[in-house]
Image (cartoon, rainbow, N blue to C red):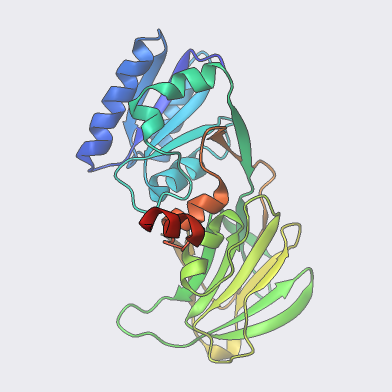
Length: 304
């Protein structure tokens, strides 16, 4: 990969991420590669304004932070065909990031120049919110994109009422969930909120959606994995007289009224994420991040 300009996005309010961004900037400068640093609390319009003033777009975006910083960056760059290289600096689990050693020993530049990496294509979710009143034609209200998930919960903040949500898959009404809410995640997002809510872990190379009820009142309401070519429609059950709130990747979007519905499908353009050939495998990542036992024979030999 030939680099002439790199955008560096670092986690806001994190001194270690800020220091790392300066280190990254200087490392690139030593190789005559220009870069521009911004904090992760940027406004999307600010980013678009920066790009519009460039003769050509950056060849790479380096993200320094945890998964939250990666998610915001990926969603902000949904309309730009720029790969992301992420390092877990000041974050928590960091499922979407590379090991930070590649950054601090400056080997990441050599790896990029020698192209010792693959582009990992991660499918995104798209949600269109429509108003569908009986006496009017349906009207598009708002659109959102997410890398991990969309989920639906109560709009109430002081109490936690039971939500009743209808789900339709490929023009067939499948179920009405009663409980705390509902999660629609991508394969990438299966290790996020969906996993915390008891959903399955799905390898990111599998093109699928996970539909996962949050604390359902019925034991028959189980998570389901469907092809990501499916069209999913979510409605608040009207006789329930309750509104629900739409969230994406941990951020509030809007309130879904009784006359509204959400149509969720796959985004045409996937998110490009750089994965180094020297990086640990997906399964070893799970072992480390989730504190699984791994190969017990190795641990037994070490103890002996």
